[in-house]
Image (cartoon, rainbow, N blue to C red):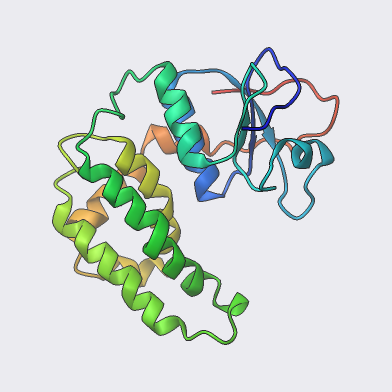
Amino acid sequence: MSRAPLHMTPVLWSFRRCPYAMRARLAIAASGVTVSLREIALRDKPADFLADSPSATVPCLVTGAGEIIDESLDIMRWALAQRDPARWLDMPAEGEDWIARCDGPFKHALDRVKYASRYPDTDPAPYHTTACAFCADLDSQIEGWLFTRPTLADMAMLPFLRQFAMIDKPWFDAQPWPQLHGWLARFLASSDLAAIMKKYALWTPGQPQVSFP
């Protein structure tokens, strides 16, 4: 694990619309742990961010001890290890399998559907089918939530299902996935989402600290 300069308050490098950064912010907000939020533009990454992030991707957390956490799920677990009032970490082991499917085959397919122009030699149709199969499986699992109440698995996956739905929302809403639709609709209308989607000015060196949540 890399080390960065010591900060009194943890620093979270973020980009508002990135689903990976969204789920990191969801867990930090749920934990109540205060971080210094640094919003960046991915097309113009600050030198300070590149010095902190080994992968040059958001989110990236620098803890108060200077430890760097460069993976969104690890940031979620770090925050919830500090404080987990809603018991998101208390979930069946199957939740980890769902997260792995979302981050693996589903995200791979999602990228090739949403960003088809980036893959000019790839037919998006089979990837769309893969994404739809995942949605159908989720629909059969959900009864209000993935398990009996919201857990890490729900909050780790919902930003990516939101991204898939927004590719063509009328089409998505017409699919035979009633439980999935209700699950996503509750998230879209939630105070949890509203709290993490506030707009912040882009970070610049020397600006006052922006506390989050």
